[in-house]
Length: 259
Image (tube, rainbow, N blue to C red; front, top):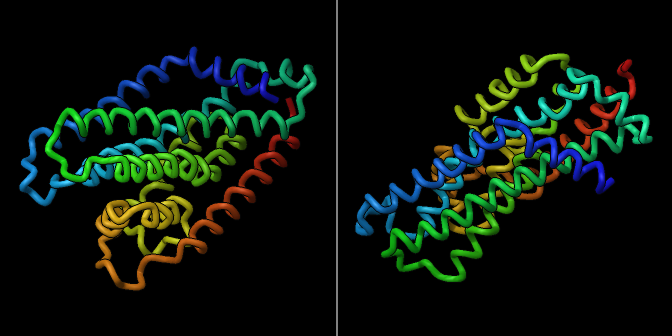
């Protein structure tokens, strides 16, 4: 299994859009750091390190990362058919379940890599911008927890898009579905928590730190203290169930496909 995962990682490294992805990820982090440098610490918008790391996290995880993972998931599956390499992989022999799992693990590793890369840039940016009274080990740990959660929860939330990538014979369906999948979460996330996996991820983030909770309430346009935010367990269970169902359907779809 590890050999297959290594092969998938090597495939990613050869893709031209990998370089573009890391450039855009760097740019998103730099934008957050630039804002921290340009806004006075007397302003409530940037008077704590929490403001910086939640801004960098929002830039990465709310829209950019789901789209990137949707594109890479589509590429991971569709390219096997386009290049006619799936038959060769199955000769090894590798079951279609193992093939699916290796690609999903690769997607999770990519997500974690982008999140931890942004986390490192954000912490460095906090020291460069300076003036944050709360820039200490506690807030650095809180930032790490938030970015690590994003690295795991976002790919878990996009597993339904992976199912469409398995079904699709082109890039159009899963990439278009990714945009439609994101739209309701961007417009009205609070009522969808516990129902929509990406909205449920927002709910889970709110429990990682007080600053993350403020970020979620701001994104959800909900007044803190109301009952509009779902419970942690409900949201996490929703994400796991949807992820498992999507994975089972994906493996079934792969097994039914004719090579």
